[in-house]
Image (cartoon, helix red, strand yellow):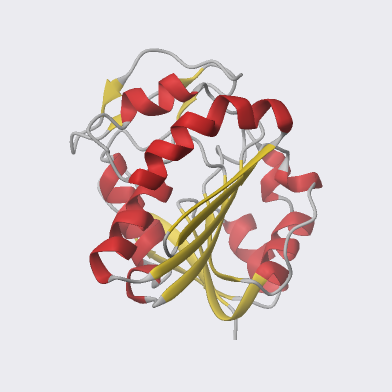
Length: 221
C-alpha cells in the first residue's frame, strides 16, 4: 500500500492527502472538487454523455470517479469507468476523504478495495454503472484501443511521475480514445501538448482555475 499523510481540506472544502512517495498533494489545494469537475468531467464533455466510457490514469483518492458517478446518476446516464493505479492507498484512506459518500457502487468499491489490491484488480457493477480498477503501472499495461469517450490523465506531475508523460505513452493514450473522444489533464506543459499533437490529437490550452493558469484538453477527430 502507498503511504499518505493526514487529511487536509482544500479551498473548496474537498478533502485530500499528501503523497509521501511523490511529494505532492493528490488533488489541487486550490479546490480539489472544482478541479475534478472543470478539468476532467466538463472539459471532456463527460457531463453530457449518455453512456460515458472513461479511462483514468491515476485513480488516487477516487475523486474523479465519484464526481463522474454523481454526474451520471443525476442525469440517468450509464457509465463504464476503467482506472489504473500503481500505488493504491488503503480503503480506509479513500473512505476518510470521501466522508458522507453513500452511493452503493462507491460503498461496494471500498469493501472490495483492499482485497482487490492483493489480486491486482477489481471489477464492480451496480445497475448501469460499472467500475474496473487495475492495480498496475499504466505505462506498462495493455490499454484498450479506441474505447474511451474520455481520458482523465491525472497522475502526479511530469517531474515526479515521468513515466506517464512520455511521448510514447501519450501516443498510446491517444490510441485508446474513440473517435470524437477527449483527453484532459491539469498539466499545461509544452512538451505534453506537443506530444498530444504528434499523436494526432487536437490539443489546446484552456483557462485554468485559481492556482493554475491553464490546463490541456485534446480531442480525437
